[in-house]
Length: 106
Length: 225
Image (cartoon, rainbow over all chains, first blue to last red; front, side):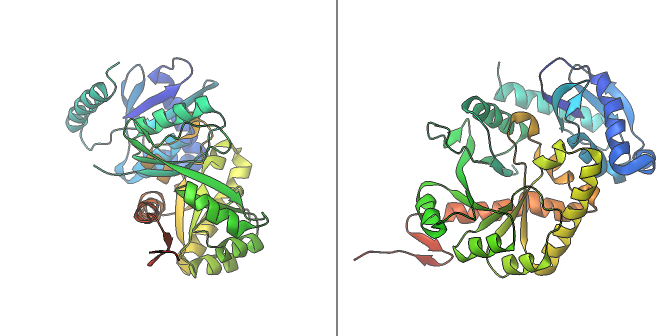
């Protein structure tokens, strides 16, 4: 799950995927992009769930780290949850949301 | 729970300090090294559970560097030397700095510099903030330099530290994302993790371990007469 931690305007989760693809292609080329095999699973207001080849996980992570702008707006993205199965990912998301709501009640 | 440390953030004004600390907390850091320079800060030591280390970056070309370091060591948790060339590195090591960083990422690091650092207890810090501001062509040269730095560091047993060097909250990265930023240079994930997570914690344990009267590893002032 890739999450928008901070941005100065509202950014739809759908806008994140093309930017991620560009970043991955820029850093690792078309070969890297094909090996990563990224597919969107779910979009949210400030997150996107993406599936990728587990052998390219760290490379996808670095492509996310190099994204600093989406549509001209400054953003800070984070790979917040990584999981092998969707079921486990959703369980972790629930735990993540509970943790965040406890830590930042407002 | 894992402890993550970003040893170098350098906000430009007081508003940015709070912005950076808040974001660092959200990203999962437990400790941050704050180089706030001349900004009047109300001695921030803790920020909602985030430990804040006071840090000063001293130019290695300064006159009276030894006295300056000793004076600063009493007031700050971390004192680093900013080096531009081999003579700066030699000077900083001679005057007892245990944290060195380059002024910007060097295009052509030299192995002799690494031999000097490797022979001391010092850590070498790389700020990856520069990588975000460069365009593609410049970035290629920087990746080449990073690859060389890691290769020399492993040959000469230099302890590398990767820090964000963030000047605002948008330049911060989550700990594992920060480690992944050097992967395009051909660095292995293990090396990146050692430099981002393991080595900063080692330095931190030394910083925390040094209490009153600390001079260097195993040497402490017990009394004066």
